[in-house]
Amino acid sequence: MLNYLWIPLLISLSKHLPTSVNAKSTFNSTLLLTSSEFGQLSPGCPAPEPNLNYRPVIGILTHPGDGASGRLNNNSNASYIAASYVKFVEAAGARVIPLIYNEPKQNFDHKLNLINGVLFTGGWAKSGRYYEVAKYVFQKVLKKNDEGDHFPLVAICLGFELLTMIISQDMNILEQFSAADSASTLDFMQNINFHGTVFQRFPPDLLKKMSTDCLVMQNHNWGISPGKLQENSNLCGFFKILTTCSDDNDKVYVSTVQAHNYPVTAFQWHPEKNAFEWGLSMIPHSEDAVQVTQYVANFFVSEARKSLSRPPASEVLDNLIYNYSPTYCGKAGKGYDEVYIFT
Ligand SMILES: *[C@@H]1O[C@H](CO)[C@@H](O)[C@H](O)[C@H]1NC(C)=O
Ligand SMILES: *[C@@H]1O[C@H](CO)[C@@H](O)[C@H](O)[C@H]1NC(C)=O
Ligand SMILES: *[C@@H]1O[C@H](CO)[C@@H](O)[C@H](O)[C@H]1NC(C)=O
Image 1 (cartoon, rainbow, N blue to C red):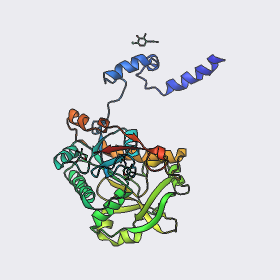
Image 2 (image 1 turned 120 degrees about the vertical axis):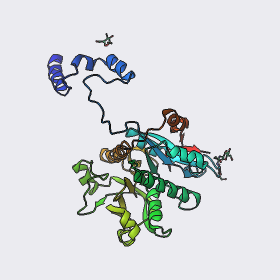
Image 3 (image 1 turned 180 degrees about the vertical axis):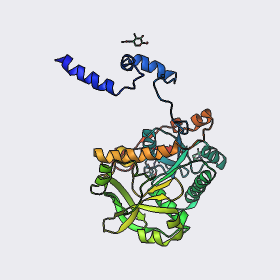
Image 4 (image 1 turned 90 degrees about the vertical axis):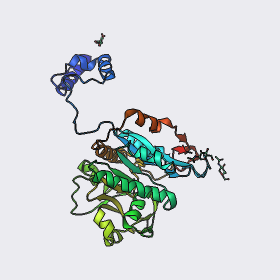
């Protein structure tokens, strides 16, 4: 009986093996471990694409506070990154360097030269030093791209709102919406070419489900309507609208945008929460919803692999987020599950 089961299994497995790798070594895990330890590719493994950077590093901008309403740290200079953003990046094959928004400019600038892309997180801070630093980083992102590196920026929720303010040069451009702790569908714009956008690599059936099932998490009170975005020449010159959503009162807001000429993508929704946050009641956790997290993360890191800046490895190691430990704060039953705090 056992033999009958195994034979077709082995045959079907061997069909998928590259012809130059023999089946015996594939099934010998000792051998596999040994060769990967030395970082050597067996003769049968195709060489990686030489034009890609397989060790991308993403900078995540910290946000003021402790991420836990003072339960963890009341220092006025504290800032944090919710660990879900870090996991989101790591799950797609990149490492993270925290860009601590209030650290001395020299350190901050040094870190900007160690990374291959930037993530702006959710939060609430829209003024003062945090706003200025976000604007500074955004300008650096444009500059790096203008100088020939492919240097992506993904901006989520507050990040989307900050880019809206920075690009429009209008601190009052945001409008109020009612979309706290709610899951929604995405309404895809008609006649939009998704080539080169985050949605290009989504399987068509998942894209279709996103327009009918509540697979994306919303948690915001601000946003911008499509009309207001289109009216602002700076904004519509920079971004094209990929999706919109409707809030609790059926008011329509822009939910995903992609820059026309830069690898800059902004989400009013939270791609990272589906897989990695549990404190808000409405976060979708279905297999489809978790795949949404994964496809967005894969898109972001695939963009960062096109950044060919390869700084000295030791300087990267000195600054990685692995030099810090996250704190579990999800026991309070609200907010983020884990946060990294920087003081
Ligand atoms: C697997 O490979 C290792 C290293 O070549 C060898 O020492 C070991 O005997 C092999 N094991 C089996 C089960 O073939
Ligand atoms: C921060 O301040 C609040 C209000 O005074 C207090 O309840 C809380 O325990 C403080 N947090 C810490 C970590 O000390
Ligand atoms: C933040 O404040 C703490 C305690 O007040 C201090 O030890 C630390 O050096 C400060 N950090 C920064 C970056 O200013």
